[in-house]
Image (cartoon, rainbow over all chains, first blue to last red; front, side, top):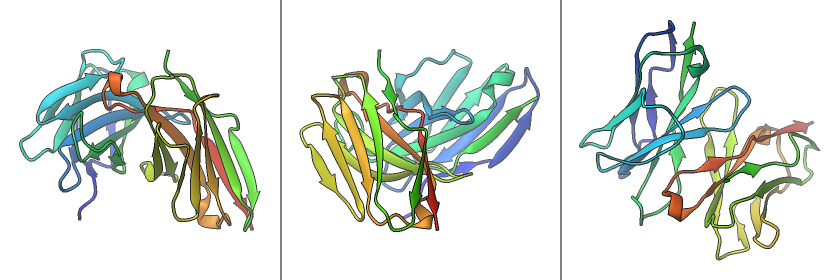
Length: 115
Length: 113
């Protein structure tokens, strides 16, 4: 069974640029959630995708957007990058949607640095 | 509002002793809780979970206790090993809010040889 994978591992961007982060969910999982983890803090929920539809969103501005593909992999896009967007971006997959199993398994994350 | 917090930011434990990590939550509607372990440079690793209709669940060397009366969650690690050194997070979920997890700030566990 393949775990959750994310790419790239590290990324450096300049303020105002756009970035796309990618996630492949664990085999058999159809739900993907994205979290932002600032240094020294717990992860903060950005949004979740279930069967290619957004299924819940945290307190993040619209410049944070996402996609989920038919194979359940997902992308996180951030436009107009700000210095405060520097963080570890985590993807988590889970087996079911709103009525399914709840445990979420995390990937290793993408470390984004905005200069 | 929803929040999950931890009492102790850093816990130093002698190798072989038992560790107890505490967590307070404020959302009485939360119905599911998870403990994660995060090592430096890695994503959170699932340790154990518990649903709100239970008050105790045991895994391999770990036990989670849930006290809904005082909105308190704890993780007990038996015979702590050097490999247990990490930051531990508790997370809660409220079904009415969807399947998102709300995390606390984390407790760092340092295992002394």
